[in-house]
Image (cartoon, rainbow, N blue to C red; front, side, top):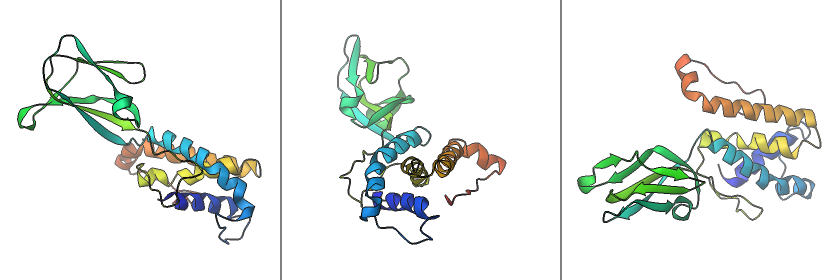
Length: 205
């Protein structure tokens, strides 16, 4: 989904019961306050959803020679979108593209990675990435790395936040549905195995 599509979907949810299905334009003065509040809500939702539907990325660093002690890597300097390390996917690539898993590393603080200096080759650091940032200047055609399925839940959270001063009961309904969708995404594998499903009462699917 594009940012414009996400915004329109959120407005559709807010006004679907009060505007009798008439589409509301994003540049309408009537919805200016709602649109202004959307980036903050969308940013929170995308980070929240990335916790259960991770965006996996990797960064590489050359280790040409052995070194004494440990090498220190500040992962966030190598990958500004770093959110969390994938501890079971830290590897070093050697000759002939052979991979060796690194288990004897240390990870401290938010992004300090210590790798034994005995490793040589190409260090491959897999991590979970933060979604793209969103602010008032984000172009409408912007797309996002979060999975499409997870993106479809973002308008629910936006609607729950921008509408809570107008209709708290409806806002709570949207928030509850957002939480249900997030839980469904988190447990998708087990639900699929058991033949379970999810039905939206507010038009998510």
